[in-house]
Image (tube, rainbow, N blue to C red; front, side, top):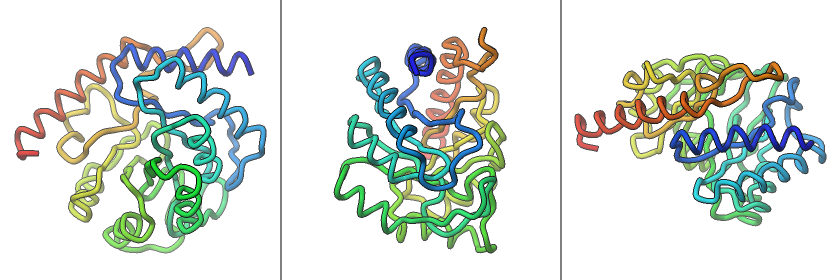
Length: 246
């Protein structure tokens, strides 16, 4: 466990040095994931790491994502450590995923948030990666349900897999469907393509393009790459805001 904490702390410090606006912790190396509820030891381990990151980077908002889709555990960790938001991969509807069929549980998630952590925001995926909707529906309907019936505070559009580029047309369509919803790009962003996505979003979740190979064979966040990306994306957002008056 000490090695896990140390690795997460090193990544967090590299991201902070790179100028990011927030951190998000997830159990990414738990593959293959539990599709719904994770075991108690996973929640405990995430809580331990989250406390370390919060204490090391107190000025950065912290988010929690418990993969594959345990929003209850994420909210529990967020409440315990004072995190600012959680990410929920399947909040409403049903998705055929790499871990089988997963159904959204917005009713339970929102009620649990009210009890445990009323100030914690919910970031919800639109057609989450490594998955497909159980039945085809118009994108506008899915987005409206996420926002208005599922209670999502912000929406995330990703590519088909971790590190895969999001579809700019889909991103634009989500923006048009719910123009008042904060919108994030969830995968595939690099310093080179930042200007392609910035006009259609308010922010992003980025990790893969900031990593380099570590001495232990696992990929680690590089502060230089983080700084280069942050600079490029911030400039692209500023340019997009100037063009459309946002």
